[in-house]
Length: 261
Ligand code: SAM
Image 1 (cartoon, protein in one colour):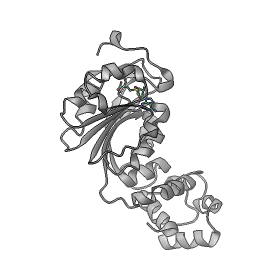
Image 2 (cartoon, rainbow, N blue to C red):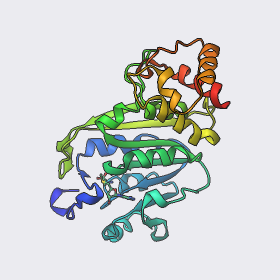
Image 3 (tube, protein in one colour):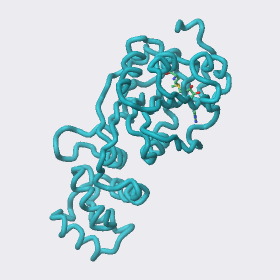
Image 4 (tube, rainbow, N blue to C red):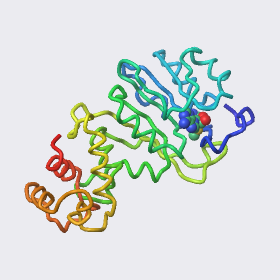
């Protein structure tokens, strides 16, 4: 799509339209060989949409900006176009879902947390602000390295890979930040079950609320001293450790000591 044809971009809705074909192709090919239903969130004026529609799978789109309806219906069945806030949708479609989105950056984290809780979403290809991507992409080596609560949550439920970096110049209008596209595959057996998502999320939030402070002290805002000491002892962890040095396995074992699975 050429830039002259693009409609006015509404900043409140995080609208930056991708116009570089090579990124469009990378994103829309990511899980095309899976047997799945495709959902695109925030299709805008049908940028990724035509290529996704060509995969010839059941295809739905969820878009808040009603201006795009006419463009979208050229590629998607009218009753498969949901005009509304993705944060308020149920995502209750049956069957394995591949969710694709060049996410509106202002609500990318709440949307990702929502998608994570939907078991049917098996694969995701998501464009996010580079800094948010770095908070989800676990380091390869085993110890710490800026692990935070979002990473601990995501790594428990998904295998995440970097698909590509996308510079501001690939969009109209260009955003002020760099972007990355990440590829997510849901783990068949997460260490902490999806039923425990809320509790695990709260635990991670508290654990990483002060990453440079000793974890034994941080957790006192929520748990009794004896319980903390017992949990750390059972996990073979030192109370003086800082959250930023924790490995995923250690976070999960500690969570289980406090809450079971
Ligand atoms: N898919 C297009 C692309 O790749 O260029 C547009 C992506 S643009 C970054 C984000 C899109 O999400 C916009 O179309 C915007 O209107 C839509 N959007 C913003 N907030 C939304 C929400 N709460 N629910 C659904 N769509 C939303």
